[in-house]
Image 1 (cartoon, rainbow, N blue to C red):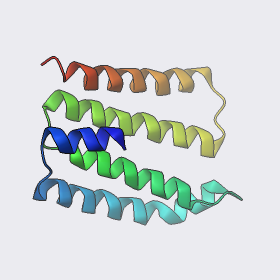
Image 2 (spheres, one colour; image 1 turned 90 degrees about the vertical axis):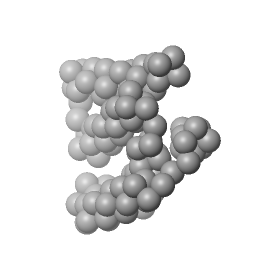
Image 3 (cartoon, helix red, strand yellow; image 1 turned 180 degrees about the vertical axis):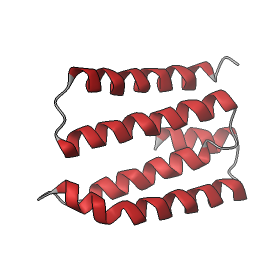
Length: 116
């Protein structure tokens, strides 16, 4: 939420951001039946809600600097990998390292965008 607010303050969203959000939201909604399957006994709506928040954040990053957009995209990838790990109960140090590596790279690129 804070990244989204910062992106709006840095560069107001336009029609491109709205269109990107619509496409990403439709993708998430189409994936919802599979999400229900993997959520098991847990309520899948919080997962869907968080995915939609990530879609908002990524679509608001579109008008930003390319390095920030890359960081935002990697942030979405890292959280998607983490969600996959949790839902599929993946127990792997390599997978954990991958999730953290992508996350740290995302944070680095977002921070780097302030210097460029």
